[in-house]
Amino acid sequence: MAVAGSSMEPALRDGDWLLVDPDAFRHRPPTAGDLVVVPDPRHRPRLIVKRVATIDATGGLVLLGDAPNASTDSRMWGPVPVSEVFGQPWFRYWPPRRIGRLR
Amino acid sequence: MNRILRALAPRRTVHAHCDIPCGVYDPQQARIEAESCYKIIAKYAESSDEVFRQRCLHVKEERAELTKHHIDVMWHDYFKPEHVEKFPDLHDVCWKASKQASQVKRTMDIAEAQKLLDLIDRIDEMWRETGGPSTTRMQQLQPVG
Image 1 (cartoon, rainbow over the protein chains, first blue to last red):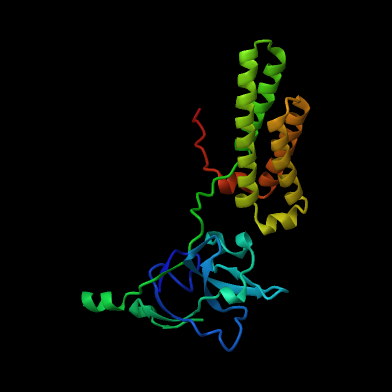
Image 2 (image 1 turned 45 degrees about the vertical axis):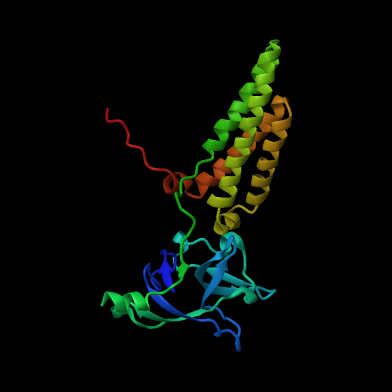
């Protein structure tokens, strides 16, 4: 998947190409610090990438952008259920000088 | 090389955007519309021209709706969780202001319009105390004397 936007800088930059594992959370739940791809709660066909900040009491993922001043996230639309998670970005294969595993 | 790149290029895009962040907020936008409501109600009371009074009713409803919209923009878009921590009654004030705008929409009671202005001024205070003037407005050049 190609990253568009700057809300995840410096970890992810606009134009990065990522591999996303759709089965990453089949055997373990997401935990704080994980990158996740979820449908945009306000416009579901659109996918967004954020980082899990905490898990709330009912198991919802509180998602935040790494760049809080340039991010619309759970501060705006609340926590996202785990069942919504599309996958976990785990590897960047472009640009060449930033190739590598993500965390 | 281009063909290889094209073959490797992702087919989907994942967004890391915020909403189009124009980032410009100012409660004066709500205040100006609310002042219009106030003045229209005053003029309505002074006039005996029925056509004019009908227009007052109509225009005031429009202005009250705009007031509500601008209050909601402050509430939904400008204020952040850290502002609520600083002002625990923030949600209550915005909610009351929004409701008061609806109230002004359906009445010709000038006291209700004054209540609306007072609530907007409280939002203005919180906007100022959270650094709104310097972070959300463009700095205007001062005329050189």
